[in-house]
Length: 250
Image (cartoon, rainbow, N blue to C red; front, top):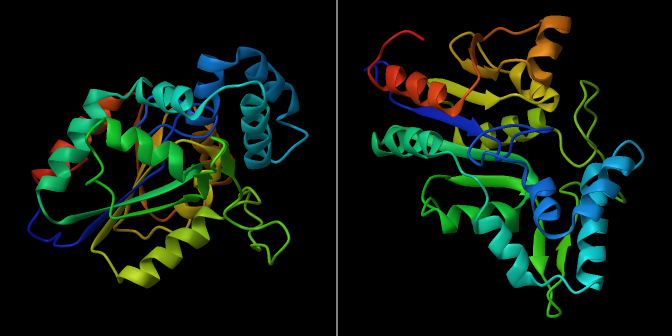
């Protein structure tokens, strides 16, 4: 890594598909239903425009529990989820340099994320995880709720963040807790990554996945100060991280 960069932050979501690709090469919210209850997955697809997404996943988890799908089945489905080895190598090699803090900023949930990280031996990667809270109850139901309680004060973002979380606010809050960084690298592809992207500085880098919602939003609205580097596959992120570690231009 360049000698000028002594303190670096890399921000990841956790999923890809409708939301975003990062470490897991799938979308956790959809994956478990595709594996365990395809009819619920179909129902979710029909309701996604009518319900807030986190609420819809929570409802689907309750329905899965009611029909007898167990905690063990859900955990197993998460453990066998495709997880791209190139992305795992990329973050592990960067972490080993000792100058990078990793921040997971995700619209998934705490149980999904930590179960997958544990199964892949990567629990050491993230210094902090901000996501929707979830916990198992004694009956084996995974109880999921929004990070921002719908009955309490709401965020005031008008850029396009979902009601459960403003990713731009969460990024700024993280920086407030941890201080400034020489460089922030944000890995994203979903339209809801536009809000944190517009808050990045000139010295920061946005790794924007091609042909996804984030790229479309940037093309439509612009407004970024940071450098934008396009990528399509996890192997390209590994390549970009390698160049950054060596102090090369991306």
